[in-house]
Length: 155
Image 1 (tube, rainbow, N blue to C red):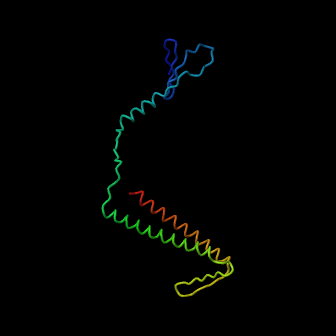
Image 2: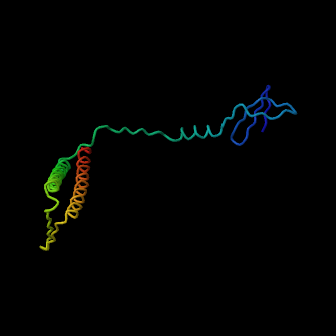
Image 3: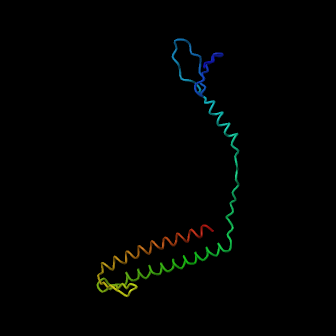
């Protein structure tokens, strides 16, 4: 659809309006000066008007916990604190053992719940076992500390 008016040319093409200067016969078509998507703008405005905006006010105050919930959190925190202390004590014992034992005369004995035992005096085996135990204790200590932080931060 072409509409000629006072020296300007306006062409509407599939939801777009192209405004440009008048083209004389024999001249090449130039790029349009302005491209406006009129239909899309109308649809967006209609959607904005049709959809009511709901503003929900959220309170910045934390949820007030019941005494039962507080007691549960305190109990969990206390148990985690005891576990944390126990793991730290075991790690300290392990470090003291690895420092104090002589590489030539150390002996380690493991006893299971059935009373069966195994002993070794191999310093390499003892060293590897100490390294593995230390790594496991450090991992457990990190998990307990993370759990303690979660409980404290949610309060």
